[in-house]
Image 1 (tube, rainbow, N blue to C red):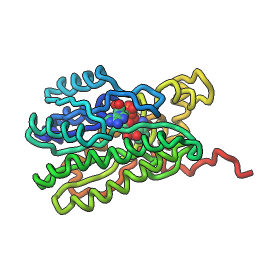
Image 2: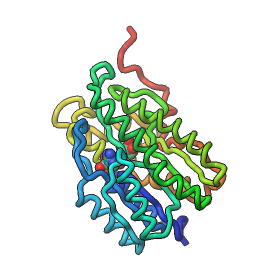
Image 3: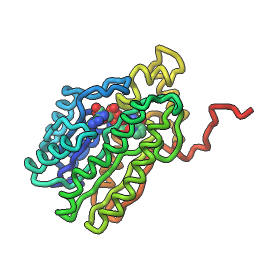
Image 4: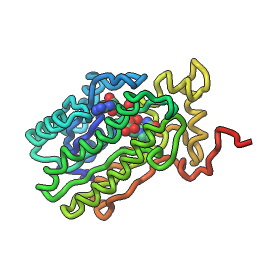
Length: 284
Ligand code: NAD
């Protein structure tokens, strides 16, 4: 018996990273999945986004659990593409029970130096993309009077972060959006919750530019990343976390175990938000 037996999950940004962990975990627990991803490069993003080979590998891992997968290229900035992916999923599986709005990008810059294009691309993907994804599945869920939506925010949805005003604004927005979705869909028996991941080891955080940032110099290594991560978490022995910890949290929120849980934000951050904090700029 799986925790999601007979369910269908729609996942954005599902080709790799946390999205792949969500897809494979849903499949392991008995759900069929619709996996979407942009499969393209965005101008403001310095690291490589997912490609067709990534998407194919996620499909392979889903099928290895004996579940079915529909893989569709869909940019969360495009309602027509999301609508087409929703229609393809419903045509194949007959319905959608779960949305995991996971797609996102991470770019850096002081707020006063960000070009308009970089700010707007961040908001378009990380905030408006979550709204468009939820809007694409909501009428179908309302019709069925059932459903669960999990949106992926960040600890940066609850606190500031260096050089990430645009990311922080988008993720705070995601948490507000989640509360309103929960409010407006509750009369139809549909739940909506957010997860706020801490530092997670995915291609978003482990590309060379990020490793150099964690190291504080060019030529950063995974060991530098691990050392930096130890300062970001509270729990003994933790650093950058495996994407599976986020997939496990989403599994709980999308399962019947969380039948009375809606409108909440669940940090999964090895205690990061409980740290007392450190001012990187001395007030001396
Ligand atoms: P990732 O880069 O491995 O995965 C993100 C996926 O989203 C990629 O497959 C990418 O191709 C896809 N994507 C990007 N723009 C898209 C668009 N416009 N339309 C559709 N798909 C798009 O990174 P990840 O860590 O797995 O990120 C997943 C989510 O977790 C993101 O929302 C991110 O902001 C959030 N998050 C990550 C961390 C972390 O430390 N990695 C921490 C907190 C929150």
